[in-house]
Image 1 (cartoon, rainbow, N blue to C red):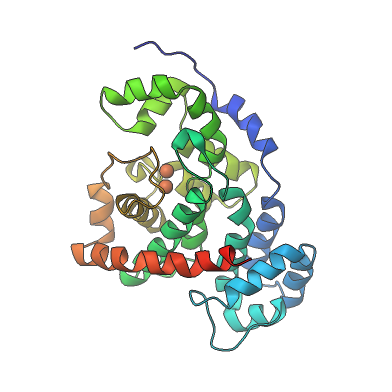
Image 2 (cartoon, rainbow, N blue to C red):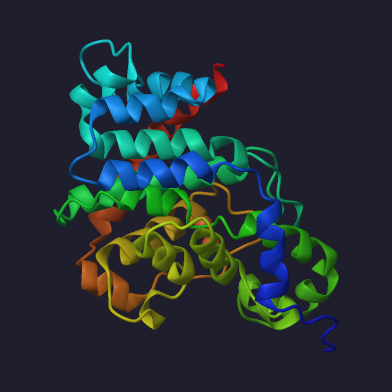
Length: 286
Ligand SMILES: [Fe+2]
Ligand SMILES: [Fe+2]
């Protein structure tokens, strides 16, 4: 099988600069929300610079997924009533909605499909963390939300070389392995580079980098293992599977490390669609 082109990840990374400027405020807020001395006023002031974002954050704060019993009318109120941890998830979902909504032809993802897949993996991962009684990790929702961000950039390259990639994939192995063989990198590696470029925390970068191969990551992390499993559960359910990952099995070691039983997967499968729709309705009712 002839290898047509080998592009370096660095060459592809140049494209990252041309991505929409979503993360500017997202990265800043992520650090603000993680810092102990951030006040509700500071968060409100940052969000005020982006009225569209404020609207989405308030809609999400009042959605049934994140919902609080009382009606939340301002960012300050949201910060006080929901707490910083829940607010992180809400802000991140609002920030990345537009960028993840784009179609990704190389991966056969229609408009909105990567977004639906990303929020499905987020709610499934969060659900798994709770069910497995793992120490509450503030990062799991956001890490899951961004795990496939590399597809935004790599999609065009996959599209250009799709015939060669499919020929390699037909010989066996996963679609992404074929992508790596033909293009010289994959969406996990590019995703990690994007998040690094956006100055996002290392925990998030690690999840994007190793979500398909958690056993290869240095130092194990429950968040990484959970996102790995949640991703494959959502693929199995046909949520944003596109061309990728259909032949992948979850790592037996990750399953063992987490102590996942069939009943956990069954519960996640039965709940994920409802959770995903609760979040998605907020964005589709603009
Ligand atoms: Fe992926
Ligand atoms: Fe994925």
